[in-house]
Length: 278
Image (cartoon, rainbow, N blue to C red; front, top):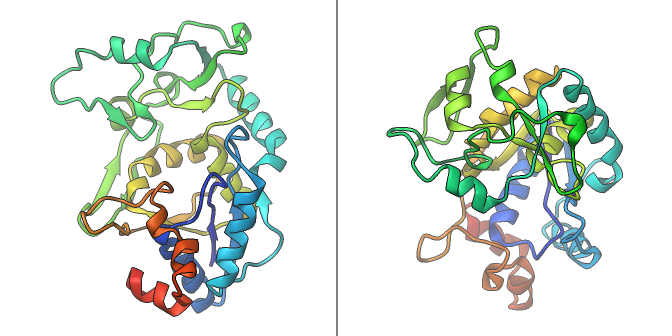
């Protein structure tokens, strides 16, 4: 078993991060496996070295250790580009200049029973599908044309989600209606989150992805991209979320729930485990 914890260095770790990291660490150690640390600094405009240093400090304080060197997405941009250009050669990648306002306007009258949002945001209506990859502008995103590759030849993916979600079967039709053409690269960035993380996990040999149930729907998109790239998918375990007293999911702006704040108030690593139910 090889698990990983992959925070973004854009703010302080909170109790939700602590739960996910400790759970992935404990599962790997119990199985005699490995626990990896990855820094998801894909968005260099928001990543800060001081936040990465704080991540290391908080994890060490929690008593977590990782195997091998820390992987940083910023050191693997070339591998993302190579994989993206490989897909582009198959003719399924196209440039998209639509703004969020453009997409919202085009989706202002959704069909009854069809969701408005998917794991990649508002479901894209395919406005730019006719554009050639070679016509890409610096201000364009790159999208994957699901209509050209999703079909009868595509296997059906079955994923077991959180207890309340149960097992879900993902077919070609589901991807077309519930995901839409996903973004593979954003303007000024070599890859999108969903595209980069599947390559990261594959290149690191991750066998089990331990993450929050809020990412369950994203699994279907990532499983499809893994299949398209010929990558062996890891097993996914989607755990419950740590919430505040009002039931709201924790965010990095919730400083009161930051690990560093708990430390400053005198909490011990054992106290953190009790707070999150471990």
